[in-house]
Image (cartoon, rainbow, N blue to C red):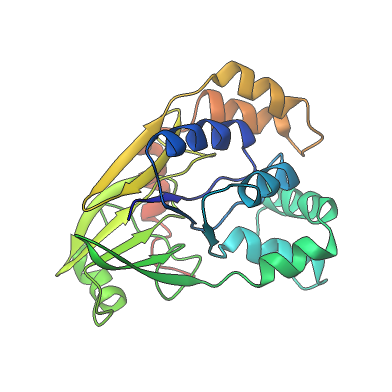
Amino acid sequence: MRIAALYDIHGNLPALEAVLAEVQRAGVDRVVVGGDVLPGPMPRETLACLLELSTPVEFLRGNGEAAVLAQMAGRELGKLPEQAREAVQWVAKQLHPADERLIASWPPTLRVAIEGLGDVLFCHATPRSDTEVFTRLTPEARLMPIFQGLDVPLVVCGHTHMQFDRAVDATRVVNAGSVGMPFGGTGAYWLLLTPDVVLRRTRYDLPKAAARIQSTSYPRANDFAQRNVLQPPSETEILALYSRVELHE
């Protein structure tokens, strides 16, 4: 079985389309979407694109979806920064009740047996949380309580928008990176799982994608195009930021 793991698409339809073209060429049998399809500039179009795939697709719910569902239900959004709050509110208005029911049905984790890898646990951030932050630099001792006792050799996660492949004791932990909002470099990042784990980066037409995003009514569409497509923040900048918030809810 060959599985494509696509995480943190964030409504970036041009990036998703480019990745799906590579997924098709790779002869993938199954797609796992690991959360945070939303929010982003093309939410309904991105969701429709995934649902229309002929390849079987399974979805996980990320913190982005949780925030959008909370907004649609009229619940408190918590400590979201103003820019994220504005995006969540806009996306919630674009979705239909059927979309809300579908997204609410997505589970937080998924286990899949893959020949050559064994049982693989897919989660959004960590197996116990959709918001916890850790990176390739997080000390192993701090991660042991999270990853011990899972009884799987491999965990696939996302949330921090940066790929890595590391070990926590006997567990291999791989971050798929972000399809639509990468940190550290341009392009669309994802994983191909075969009897091994292959970190993938798909190049696509960034100026054309930025123009499509800027043509939407998404809040701060120009900022998304500039900072998340054309010139993402550096890995150094993001690692410094994450070091101050890692493993805090």
